[in-house]
Amino acid sequence: MRVSSELHQSRYTKLLIAKHSPQNSDAADGDVLYVAPRTSVPLRPHVSHHFLSTRDRKTRSRYGWVKEVAPFEPDEFIRRFLPGPDLSPQEAGAIEAMLRSIADLAEGSPVAATYSVRGVEEKVMELDIHRVFFYPTRR
Image (cartoon, rainbow, N blue to C red; front, top):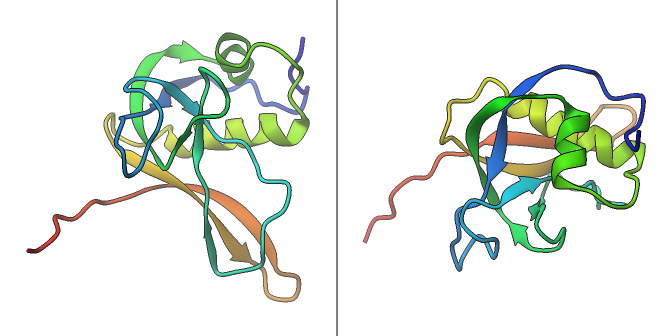
């Protein structure tokens, strides 16, 4: 098996897909998305992050939309959508954190990835996958 044994064997029924938009996403409509952790993050209150398309592992999307699918485990997601070289425990953990974060959201909910500072004595940057709300712009 190519997935870290640290992954929990929970079953999930939701994943993230892209909606193409020149302003927010270079990924094609319907591309399955995942999140890859940064190797270093500056210590700031919030640092925007992005999702990557599983199609080529390079194409970025600022937002992802929740889609309901047949139940699967994190290692199944990785085998199906990210074949190839082994993932590090940090990469596999970020994917499972993404799946846990969207598990209770309604289908069609838009989400984003943001690093936020946590801690009082020792400040660390932590990746959050969260729902976003779009408001119409006033003209």
